[in-house]
Image (cartoon, rainbow, N blue to C red; front, side, top):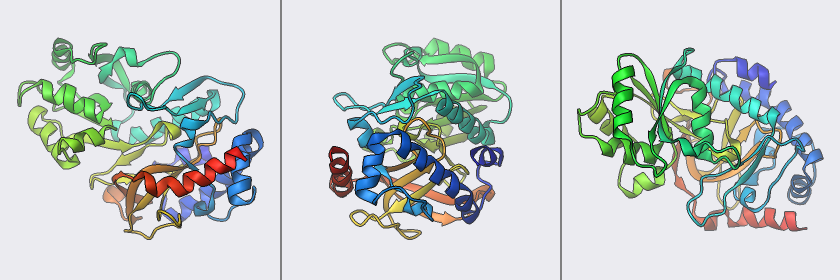
Length: 355
């Protein structure tokens, strides 16, 4: 079923059809993790009364995203790499076990999702990061993001040195060599703002043919009072960039990318879904009601990351009525959830694992 969903245009299924197609595959995936990951099986037994065939996507057991910081949960003995989240200094990073099968599914999912905005041809690629982010072991979310986008790029140039300072000459040379035709820029949002935008004056360099893809780091920008519309307007004014695509994703479900539409809302592709839950009761919220975001994905086979309760607050604005003909749910991110809101769910899962 994953392959069939992957073959469709990424936002082409009505919500009811998507849920029907995902349901069987999600049940199979839950059974696989239950059989091969003892920690996940203990959680399902203690908190959900054991494994069964669930009848709705909203019924599936979910793990709080913080559990991946506390335990290395694996459903596979064949490891390709253990990925880490890009936590701030002093934070314990998540540890995600990715084998060859999951890595292949992640790669195919990224290609299917981003082909929608980047096309079929590989574009010259300016990475707003340092080459040092690509390490052979312990790959972080930033490194995974750059590595994933390199599938769409050619002649990659890294805009930052090892100290994350901008290499202005390298950026200027890249623009001079590639600026006459479409090219790709990718970076985490805060790096794009602090290391690219703030390194130049308005009109100093022409990047108007760029397709800019960015994600992450919004918390730092919000502290500087920079909203998404202001970010887009500023990049347009300074560099002439008009094709700007934010996306929502995280290392615990790497490859499952919710891509921004022309309306500024985020759309899960066909092989993923999103549920917003009321804090405390954890019942599904209504359309237009804010709550904690749960994401579901058919990608993770090597670890039980197929149903994850995030630490983010969001709201589903529309269903099957998105911009540009996009179907399915349209999500808006509000911000981070207070820790107190997640304590009840996390405590139940922690107790289940310890039992």
